[in-house]
Length: 304
Image (cartoon, rainbow, N blue to C red; front, side, top):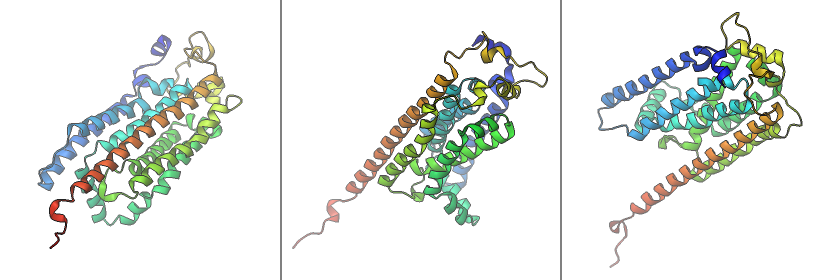
């Protein structure tokens, strides 16, 4: 690992431009909450847990899209899968949970005021979100697509944003952060979570059970060098020793690393979805208790 720190500079290792963007997003989050609380003139407050969720979500997004994980993910596929987990299965739900309900209501009212209901209905379709995210995720890991995107920073960034957008739509229906905009009942939300787990399985299985390595990014020195060249200043020498020399720090061969990547994705996805099912059950039970508590003695008709 020491060779990574010496072979690459601060920008390649820590992605400062992303860090600046995340700091700006955190400032905008605080500013928007402050402004909206004054504008609506209602005694509403943002709980500490909202701020904690949003902050952890930004941190997870930085871990998935930046930090040294981004660089090492170009060399070790299992690290790449860890990036995917952090960005799309940890950061997105935390960010959604970090936005207070009253703020989501204000944002929804603003969009409706602008006459965007048809667009909202289209992108808020749960079936569309289900197939969009899992389709983009699976297509991303088709070998030709993966290697092509890794060698094109612009296309790779565009695809990352598309995946993030699709993940937001998918998690919106699983978490249902805005009660007035629920499209699925609690039981159907649980079924929706199971469906997501099923649809992502073929991509994981392909990676795990492939008889040989599939990705030239991790096996072809020419492709690897081209990918790594985008992490270095123009004209810098590619540290080929990190690929197949004594400086490499990947303890697994390429096929075992690929298998570990698929297993890691499937296990982490199951853990996150399992936690989400527990979250939905908790919401479901809370609503049932509220409905039971609404029935009081005065609600029961008297007999004469």
